[in-house]
Length: 217
Ligand code: TYD
Image 1: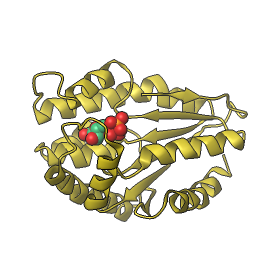
Image 2: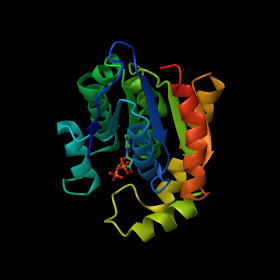
Image 3: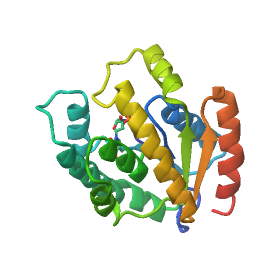
């Protein structure tokens, strides 16, 4: 997992915590790359990051997802994702925000609520594990039908991870949408984008959505 940090022009102000969420194949990773190129062009200080992280717990999780270890129970994986997140916050996210940077993170708490619940962990338990973590300043949910996401993943031709199975993705998508809507209903800052459109159309919507939100930072 690559992590990029650039110098912040305004180190004394608190930064902005931005998260991209969506099922596998929804395009969060490529749009994150695009946004960070845009931020570089604008001379904004940012920290590009993702979960699972490239830190020790995140590396263990990636091994599990590739099927390299004996299977971990859904519960133990939920604990690992929460541990990786706690470590990510204290090691990278909080220091970058304190330094005035825009943190652009691919996946966060909503991913656990969708995937770990779909894997069979009671949602209340997943909520409790994630309750201590701060709510991002803005979450963008990439909405995409599971069939289109499956076609895009097939085109990428990468090795399949244990969660990239059609029936499981269907379950994840339902939970993801329900949880994202519940966040919105409870007043948490989240926007939905139609990720079935072209890359350029999605980027244009992200630009219109995100750059004004960053203007005051
Ligand atoms: P992903 O973003 O697909 O990483 P990469 O593109 O580098 O493979 O994340 C890997 C998987 O981890 C993905 O299927 C979603 C899953 N995941 C969870 O199950 N729970 C979580 O809390 C997070 C952050 C990810």
